[in-house]
Each structure stands twice: as structure tokens, then as C-alpha cells.
Image (cartoon, rainbow, N blue to C red; front, side):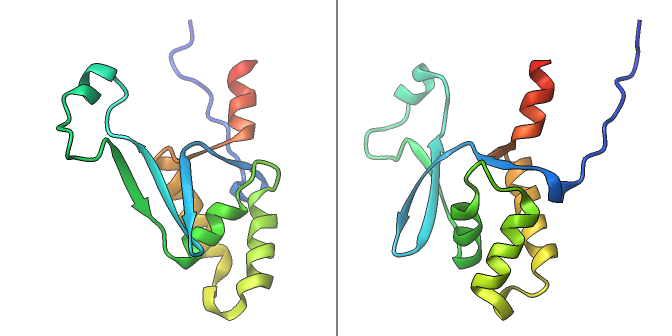
Length: 121
């Protein structure tokens, strides 16, 4: 019987992020939305004049990163792409974008393809 699982180290720059929440785009800005409750009974308890979704509005950089995440590009490619597109406005680009993607992952707005493959095995 194993008491501890073996931790596997991954390089963030080699991982491929995939969006896990719905969103809409308005004038170049992205708003991520998801229901306040997963349970339909709890959803029915929300008053009619109150929104049933939580909306998260992203700034320019966050919107660009969110739109660049398509499930096919790894993090290092996204950083290179945005660095050439936006340039001086996001320096140091690797640190800022990797921290933002890490926060998106911890809040479960995205997931990584490689982690899903490991769970299926």
C-alpha cells in the first residue's frame, strides 16, 4: 500500500492550456462567466432580479492571453506570440503571462491538456 503519491514536476512553458469556462468578448475585452451554483436547486433560490452567473472582466493583457489560449499552443508559444504582438507594454512578458496563466489554473478557469491525459491512464 502506497501512502504517498509520487509528485511529478512539469515545466509550465511546455504545458498546453485549454479554456474551461464560457466567455464573451466586447470591444476587445473578455468577460468570463460561470454559474454561481452548480446545483439547479440552489440556482432556483437566487432571486429573479439578481444575476445567476458570476462575471469576471479581464483587462487588455488578460483578454489577449485568454484569446491566445486555444488548446493547441503551449505557454512558451503564447508568450512569444503576445510579446511580438504587444511588445513593450508587457515587459517582463514571461513572468507576467506565466503568473497570470498559473492564477487562471488555480481558479479552475483553464486546465492543461497534459494533466488530463495523465488522469485517463
